[in-house]
Image (cartoon, rainbow, N blue to C red):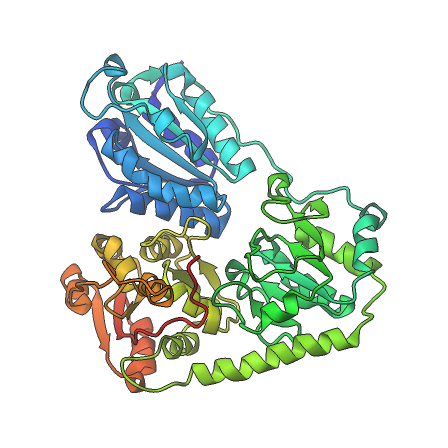
Length: 537
């Protein structure tokens, strides 16, 4: 039997699971893996400038595609730098595998340079982590990690001693198990407890999340028959068209400011693929039904009365068929009034003039410039809440750092999104502070000819934190930024840079940048406006 090296087997097993890219930074402890990557062509190594970017890119790929995202790093500082991006994957339940080199097997547990117990280090984030102790075990632990990641939507990790990457192994590749996702035994009669609760509703609301991505039409059909308003999490913006008479918009900070007063009066709430339940915006006494494909998401921070473990796309039609139909037309009048009131105000906010440019005006110009099916990646901070508040999506897909909320996410997510979906327009909306955290990876866009468009809200501050200090009456410290000339930095890295100083030129420049072949950056002078819903949360 012809034996193969541990590195060769790792790559072949990853191919079985459909992996096409590994994001990482080259280091001493993974040189054997890099050698094997170079000798094949099916899996590409995307060399970035910082390991946290590699892990964020892997997380973004997993969120976008539903497949495995893979990142790699060396021992010591390499794996340590991965942790921030792995935290994002952990919090948002993105299936990500981290492969890290470890010190040589003869030095494990000693005072050797860069040694750390990687299994202990990564424990808070990884549902499974193992050190490869023998070459023949490589496929067993790798296939276990891959399977756990996919089934649980989890971070997994294997660490491989430096010397073991090149060792020969007798291990055999394992086929990927066929997972019949979404296949259920639900019948309408089996959902009778949920139907009974829904038929009691006088003031129903549907809260749709990312898990309802493939069931948007069904959500609308259910809302029409039930007489329900629809609210969405930020990740679900774009699944339901803004023109829907039932759509109140997003909930939480930056959402429709008139929606909470309606939502708090709801008597029955159906959550469809959603785990977002923002304190201060939700009803206290409603009966709550939650549909989620993952059992562990049921009741996660939400006072659920009835949980349905299943795919929203399969469960919702059965509920729709069995409902009695709407009973309270006055409730829909309230929903429509909240929607129309906000529609008018939103339109006004997006048309404000002046320089520096109001954030809502920037959002409106982005809305007018991007393709209907664009992928929009958001950094964490002030840009997130303004986009949540004022962006009126069509069919765009939003990628962002949900529960982890790390700054610096917007650029790595855009890079990964374009690699995964090269036919799509990819727009990265970032703050100046967030961009500065991953600024070096502008070079990555140029190196791999990744055609993304970066839009920078430049207000010379960590605006969200400054807002909170102002609202809470605190003295400001550490929130002012010393920004470079982003256009010159972009051009030095090989991107095309544009500067916007007035709202009159904003939309034209955005459209020009988006139509330009190759990566671009648009630096927009942004007014330091305190977001209307700023609170210390």
